[in-house]
Every structure is written in C-alpha cells, then in structure tokens.
Image 1 (tube, rainbow, N blue to C red):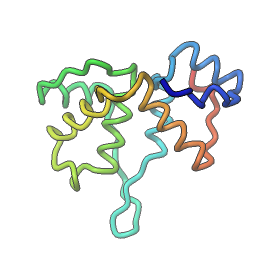
Image 2: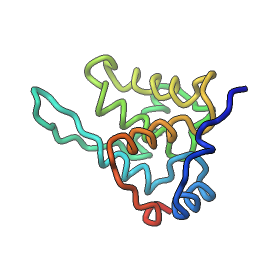
Image 3: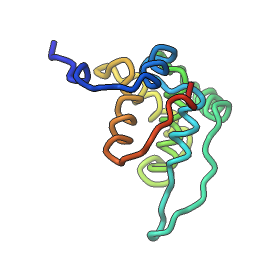
Amino acid sequence: MKTDLTIYDRLSDEMMDYLYNNGWHFNKNLCEFAVSKMYKTVNDKKVEMKPYTKKEVDDILDKANIELDNPGLYDYVYVANMCKFDFLGSSVSDEFHLAKYVKDVVDDTDGYDGIVFSRWFMDTRKKGITIYWEDMI
C-alpha cells in the first residue's frame, strides 16, 4: 500500500470538525455550496441551470432501476449535478445514462472511501475557492 500523502496536509480546526461529523463526504450544506459553484457554458456564455435536488436524483435513480452501494451521504447528489452541468446533452445523452454515470462514479471498484469529496476538495484548492467550514457543519 502506498503512503497517503494527505497526512501531511494542514487542515483547519473547522474542517476537522466537518470531517469528524461527515467523513470525507458531502453533507447537504456542502453539497449545495459545491453545486452553487457549477455552471455550464454554451458558445462562451453562461447558461442558467437549475440543479437537481436530492429527491430529483433519487427519482432519476429509481426510474433507471439503479441502486447505489456507496452513495456517501450527498456525494451522489454532487456527482449527478456535476454530470448535469458538464456532460448531460453531450457525452451523457439523457437522465438514464446520467444515472448510470452516477453509479459508475460512486461505486467505482478501484476507488476509495471519500473519492468524490477528495477530488472536489483538491479542485477547490487549485481554483482558490474559500470554504467557510463552520457554515457547512
């Protein structure tokens, strides 16, 4: 097993509180925050899109007869919205395939616990997005 290099990261007390309560997973507040930063562009213009709610994602999964093994609190809701904003109507043709994409991502057999959150967190660091962790708990 390789060494987890995140052990060298210095995390704020507020983030540590968040992780203590949620692990490396999205809760409702953090999912809503993360999704609020998403946008789609068409012809170099931002397009207004309404994000999926948890209930809408659950309905899409039910309709596609897909059951998740590792939904990770709100991780799957984040993934569904990321797919909607980035891929739906392009490489992902419809909501049935969006549901399959969500399943593939959150139940990835060679992934690890917290993979969705970890990837998002690294993206926020690279983009310079400030997260007020005390508001996410």
